[in-house]
View (cartoon, rainbow, N blue to C red):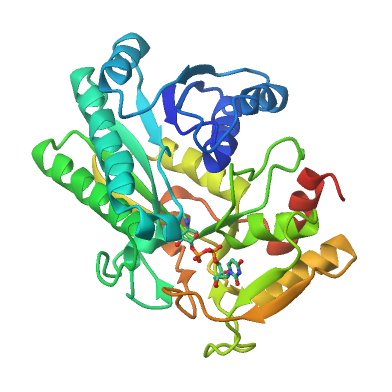
Length: 330
Ligand code: WQD
């Protein structure tokens, strides 16, 4: 199939583009390079053998997006493009709603104008808000979301639900990621955000390289075995393969899937896993809790396994190994 990957030079988008190309699909990428680098395209070519056609384009530029779609004649869209820093979204809500919501509406308009009726949307476990620690696709969404970033993901899901009500032939597969970690086993591409990262693993990476002196662990007084928060960390290649499985099983309607391992790992356990893989200590200290953090979040991934034939295969140890390889410090 001919596939448009928005945000395809980003962390998850680039890993997914590789899996799509290796599966024989024709991939084109639209990205504004706000949080990625054009050089990723050469890495994709080196790994997968084909350099995707690339459009340096912002989804807020509707005229340009429409022109791309008029020429592209895509079968499916995989939509990754969006701002995703939770804390930043609290400080800059209007920027996040414009970028993520208006950008997505422009994309959906261009799809409608050019007869593209299939989308796989990069959503997030954040949409579950305070629905509990172990989450399945029928867990409540939209309640207790603590930040505009998460609200944009929930609102986009609602927009997709409404389109599916209006058009019974429209296919909206929604993939709710838990915590993506790791890098491609080749070591050629990985999580490489511009600016100061917000998530645990890119911060661990900067501590490992010395750019950040030590990791602050946000709270060790949570009701968990070691007092630190637990999350479902899923290797980015497993996540990418989940998109390929979703593509191969697309059907009309709004269809959500959790992409997680079903296993929760604490921050301390992540630190120990990195130290084990690196063979040296990772400087860290305990600090105050971070506002909005929940003690535990973990996927029930049974639906994706049953309906997509997909199950996460890589472990946290694999993710640490691949992270070190990407850092060139195996
Ligand atoms: C993980 C754990 C922190 C940094 C967010 C988004 C979610 C998704 C993934 C996009 C928490 C702790 C972190 C640090 C720490 N994003 N931590 N010190 O908050 O689970 O999820 O990112 O889809 O939508 O909500 O991920 O990596 O920020 O934090 O102790 O310097 O690591 O407290 O327990 P989170 P995270």
